[in-house]
Length: 186
Image 1: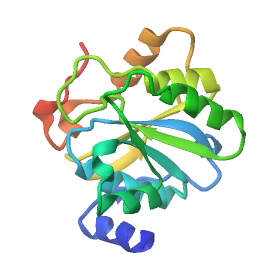
Image 2: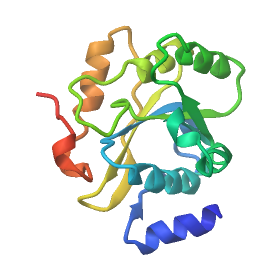
Image 3: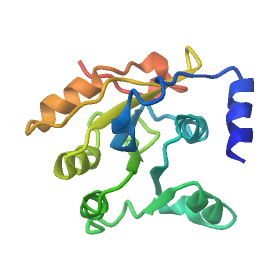
């Protein structure tokens, strides 16, 4: 099924820009920060890219998407339901504990946490990477160029604001499927 989906995405004209095999070992233990996130199709295209990268990515998706008939399919694709209405769900702690077990683990998070325009990104993706001691891999889906790719790894420092400003500066609204729903930083 994965190969079929990759082929469909490519037939639709998308270029999946891949690093050479073995050149990006950090992709097996990282937090992917994917932006801009303005459409559900970001997931569909991004999944093909992760599979092409041969990364076993786990994607946080709001729990409302896990109703029948999508729930089982999403779980089989590595999706993890998130209760965004519960501030006490300790997803950061759970993710950090999973990283502490060792082995391959790649989390895919959209820091905007919604498809609506937001001025401030959610902090969880940075907290997970910082506490777990893993890099943040900024990833993009560029609808203008019809390509998917990665920026250089960002290793979190103790300065959240500087790290996020650096990551956000990589993205521009022309990349988004719906450019009016992505807010660039000044």
